[in-house]
Structures are given as structure tokens and as C-alpha cells.
Amino acid sequence: MNVTMLIASIALVISLASLLIAVGNARRLNIMGVGRPNLILPEALPDGEAVPEVIRDALSAASPESRAGRLLLVVASGNCPACRSLAIDLNHQRARLGALPMVVVDESQSDVAPFAEFLDFETPSVPDAGNKLKEALRVKVIPYSFVISDWRIVGHAVGSDVTTLTRLSAEIGAAERS
Image (cartoon, rainbow, N blue to C red; front, side, top):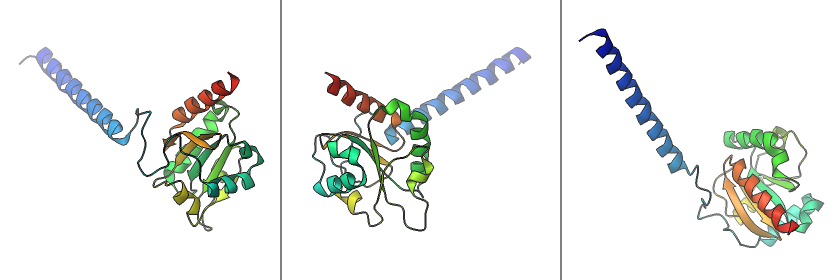
């Protein structure tokens, strides 16, 4: 075997290995739900569902802006690594979310820094150490975000999916302008 054949064989093996790794990563992301715009966890309140009264009362008390029933609701905790990742994404993408007011339902315990401390902007936060609000929303995993309009759930995102939140807030803004 000459040197050229050896180099060609090594290049072929490397390209096949990188292809297999890429396919494996794509499959892993698909299993996690990345790229599925309509991913809905069966436990959470579905799109079109009215926001429970206990949530309305808590959010209205925390933020006068939310009384209109149009907001971004984020359920998170300060001791959750995925929640901190969402905070970083929200810090970078806040301007793209438009004028949609944001309220945080924070399930952090008293010995942990609240989620709002990881944000670079001011937003109302409702403590939920007993998970009463989280249970009313039927949220099983955090971070979990809801886009709400007229006190109805318009859409939601699991994890650090700011792209979906940006799209949904733009749709709400377009609907209000028309």
C-alpha cells in the first residue's frame, strides 16, 4: 500500500466517523425535542387553556402590567443550571421579546439565590417555594415558559428555548396591531 492510499483510507474513515457523530447528535437533539415547535408536555396546561385564578391573582399582585393578561411567564429556580442558561439567553434576547412584560414564578428555596438575580433587567418575581403555583400550571420540569394573552395560554417553551418565545411574542404583537 502506498502513502496516497493510506492517506485516502484515513480520510475516508475520519469522514465516516464525523458523519456518524453528526447523525447521533441530530438524533439526540430530536429525542430531546429541539426543533419541535409544538412540543407539549402532557402535564402542562395546553394552549388555549385559561390561566387558573390562583395564578392570575399572584401575577396581578406582583406586576400591575400583567393585569391586562398579556405576559411572558417563566417558571424557574436559582439553583437550576438549565434555568441559569435560560437567564443568560433572556439577557441576550430580551430586546427581541418586544414589550411583552415578563413575570417569574420562582421556586427557589430560601437558602438559594433567586432566579431574578441572574437576569440583567428588572422583572417582577413571585416566590413559589411550596410549588403551589407550579402545580396549578401543571409544570413538571423547569425552566418552563408560557406566553399568555387575554389570560389564555398562547404557547409555551421548555428549557432555554428563547426562539419559540420570541416567535410567540411577535405573533401576539402582530395580532394586536391588526
